[in-house]
Length: 106
Image (cartoon, rainbow, N blue to C red; front, side, top):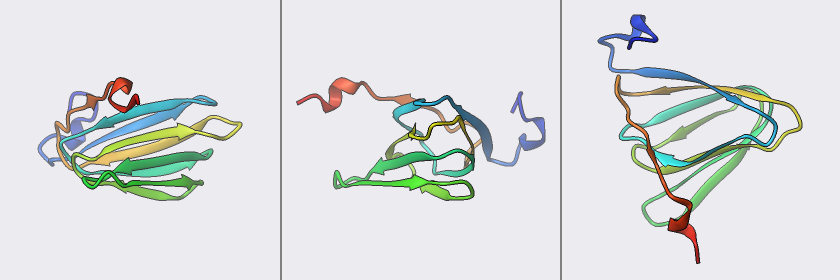
């Protein structure tokens, strides 16, 4: 709420995601649901549900993706230009829990 005082008390938060070419937001989770809208570029975004099923999609400008509460999720810029997205989460303090890549080592 310090960065977005207009959101204070509304129970939501927002963030701008700037992806360089090949940029990655590694797999992570929040204690809230998240909505992402892609404004520039192209990315692959996805999440893993509680049955260990992976859902992912190539997003183009104007596409929206929803990440359910507490689901592991990620975003990767697969285009040849920078990408820009905005996200909104349904809590003023959604938290961020990164996940070690060793969790997926086989």
